[in-house]
Length: 130
Image (cartoon, rainbow, N blue to C red):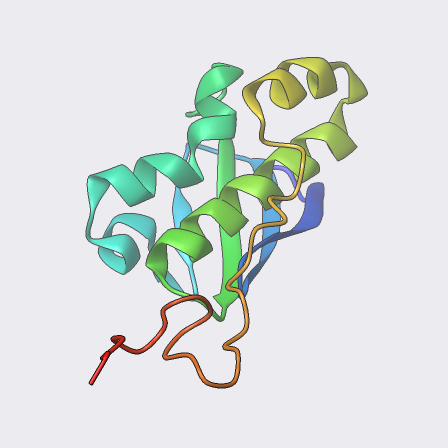
């Protein structure tokens, strides 16, 4: 096991993930517990390893992640963003492949603020003529 590691921060909506990658066997640890146990949903867990899967590196790197804020889906996508950025730090030649897959760009979409007089950002109360 190598002591050399690469870190990066990934973000999505309100979630923020500090990702550390190093050579290993493909283990994923999120907030101190295994990735499968943390997400208990294979679809979300697969999102976290998507950047590795595209580069065929799933079993070559161990991931250690600290993630805060948001929901599970936002956290999974924040981890994916962080993993992609860390992989690029290690080897710049991976950037075009990851960019084409859409993992390099931070997704700017976030929840729109609530407006006065409305129930949510855009939902108005029911109109009554009388």
